[in-house]
Image (tube, rainbow, N blue to C red):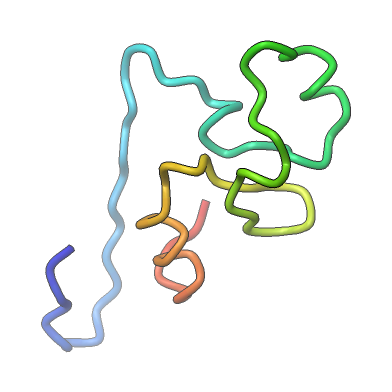
Length: 76
């Protein structure tokens, strides 16, 4: 990501993931038993995800988004 220009303005960036995106494996309800009960073959193990709250986590491949989240630079 390019560094900001320091003008203090806020930007809205919308990322549309079209096609084969699996929403429940993008932002994962990793503490919800129903997620694991209903997605036995495709669920991510709790120890492999990137938690963003007590209930939700990012997919393990979303480290860049997690850094933005941790820095207060993105929201869902």
